[in-house]
Amino acid sequence: MGHHAHRRRLTWVLWRWIESRDFVGYVRLAVVWTVIAVAGDFLFIVKALHPPDGYYKLDVYLYYVLTFLMPLIAGWLQTRAPERPAH
Image (tube, rainbow, N blue to C red; front, side, top):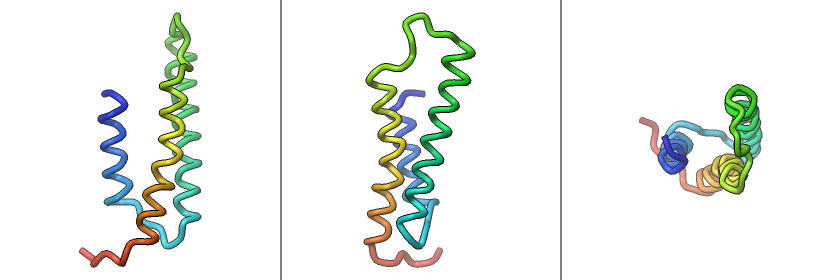
């Protein structure tokens, strides 16, 4: 799965299923998701697979930045949006 497909799925999950009453919840989510992404990459890609050309390049750092920013953007949009009706 490419980064684009992952990002689209993550965006849908963020907008549809993650809710917090305040922005701090989204900040916590951003930190936790980023820590999971960095730790998982390190353990399962860097340590386990030992990529010959290395792993940490610009696209990986961009992925980490987006992983951190997406919950913040979703939180900003949801906390400023009018209440959604209950389903």
